[in-house]
Length: 109
Length: 114
Image 1 (cartoon, chains in turn red, blue):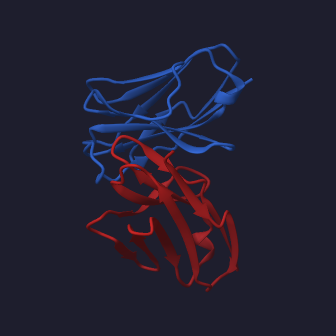
Image 2 (cartoon, rainbow over the protein chains, first blue to last red):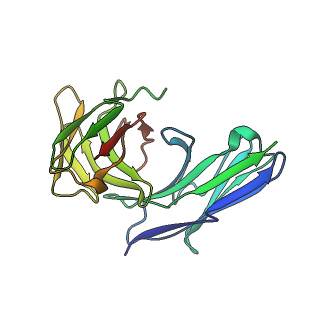
């Protein structure tokens, strides 16, 4: 059965800390892995990682994909209170999208 | 604001009823995706349409159906509603229909079944 597992379920850090969010997957046909940020509204796209693009960076956020070990990490450096959200990982198999349950990040001032 | 619009924002109805959720994609986007987000199941992919044709199908119940119209807006029909159908329903759109297209999510329709 295809599945995506995220860890930890929740995380509380102080402003300025660096956090690492994990996403592991088991799917029969991998096309891409996506990271989304969800505050109290719709998910917003962060990164897409594919076989040809296994590392992405945008400002304080970065992500890598390990296709051999079937996982991805999302790093956030110098966290800010505005980073507080649920971070979702999803895998696209070409005919389905599988989402993890998300990691809830709370950044304390 | 992603440019994807969904109506209504909130919907309260009774078990056994039928409802229709509407989604208008961003200008120029040909694909529409429907998702269900509930507290116990997380975000689940339901179905994708590309330029009027069904492209991919996820965990969509037989009581649910969707379509995409020539003007590219989409509707999700939910019938014989059950308490467990209470959830946030998101629509997303993308330019193309492939795996490398970024999806932009609408604000969602919150459905409450009493």
